[in-house]
Amino acid sequence: MIICDLDYTIVNVNTTYDFLCYFYPVRYKILSILLRPLVLITNIIKIDIYKKVLTILCLKGKIKINLEIIANNYINFLIKNKAINNELLHVINNYKGKKILLSASLEILVNCFLKMGFDYAISSKMYYQKDKFKNFSDLYGKKHILIEELSKKFKNIIVIDDSPESEFFLLQNGVTILSPEEAIIFIG
Image (cartoon, rainbow, N blue to C red; front, side):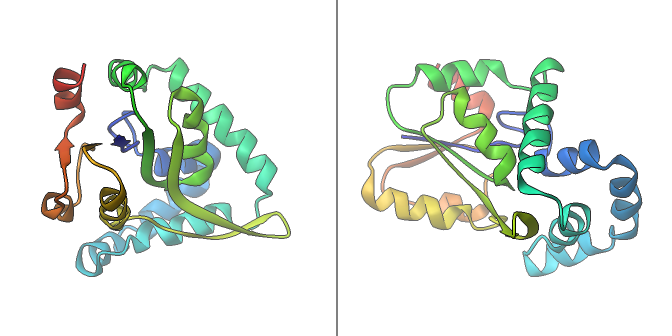
C-alpha cells in the first residue's frame, strides 16, 4: 500500500492557500497579511489556526457545488501550468497495490486527484449547512494517527511525504517513509 501526501509531493504548491488565492485573490491577500501573526500560534499549539481562520473567512457561506466547480477549474489550472509531479504520479500509477491520497488539504481539492490513479482520498473534511460552507476539520498534524491505524491492518505501507510529521518515524509494523525523490528512485 502506498499512502501519498498532496502538497509539495504530488503538486508543487500548498493547495489550500493557493486555491484560496485563486478563488479570492484580493480577500486572500488582505487576510493573509492581517492573520499572519496566527502562524506563531500554530507553531506553539500544533493546530493550524491561521489556515482555519483564513479558510473560513474566505469560504464561509459559499455554495458547495460552486466550490466544487471552482476546485475542478483550479486543479485543471495546476495541470496546465505543470505544477504536478508527473514523474511521481507515473511511479504511483504503476504500483500494484492500494493507493491512498492522504492530505490536510481541503476535501474539494483532494477529491479532484482521485482520477489521477488513487483508490481513496482522506483529507480535511468540509462541513456545509444548507449547501453553504460552514467549517472544516483539519487533518494538520493528525495524519500519523490514520497511518498508525492502517498499519494495524496492512503490511508494508510506503508513505510518500515531503514533510512527514515527526510521529511518522515512530510508526512500526512495516511503515516506510520516503520523500518524493526517494519514492521515484526506490519504487520507480
